[in-house]
Length: 228
Picture 1 (cartoon, rainbow, N blue to C red):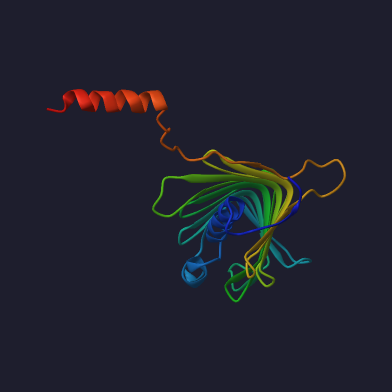
Picture 2: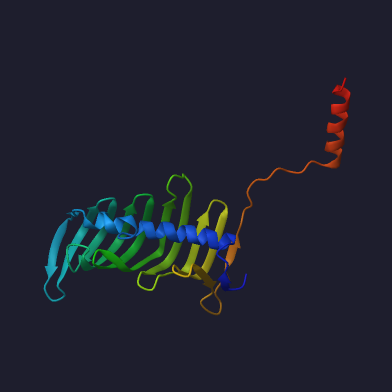
């Protein structure tokens, strides 16, 4: 399939939009979490804590951070401030982020907050993996990508480096997926020569199999025999 903008009313657009919305709910500081979770007390456990005066950064090893329904585990953590009001956080090594029905595993996550709002998030892995469950449903959407960047101010989410999204028997894969939240527009393309093209696998829902003419005739014959 050639690269290009795809209609949001089609299968591809609907699947991507569902996943993006779930992802935004999963990232700390978004949706309801911005108004509730990020103003709740922070609980932080670490094997060790240090302060780098040159960079004015707090450093943690063996980190476990929780706030409301948000949970973050990482081998290493750095923060410019111990809150989400106006701060920069970096998590490295076996990073796990959990919130409500979302689960992310990655190598690193960089989160920039301003006034209790997540402004920019960059998640990287080899690959970074996502498991997101729709509220009120047992269906899980799986995704992976080398890098995921979310820019709140510009309203853009970018998946790059062998991005793949799977839901049920449906799958989308591309070297680059860009979703503009404000315009509700999705763009998928290869990043250069030699990259695989956009691939879509769609499994139709089960539908009744039409009866053959022979089956119809047999049914009609049986009905006539039973008639008084």
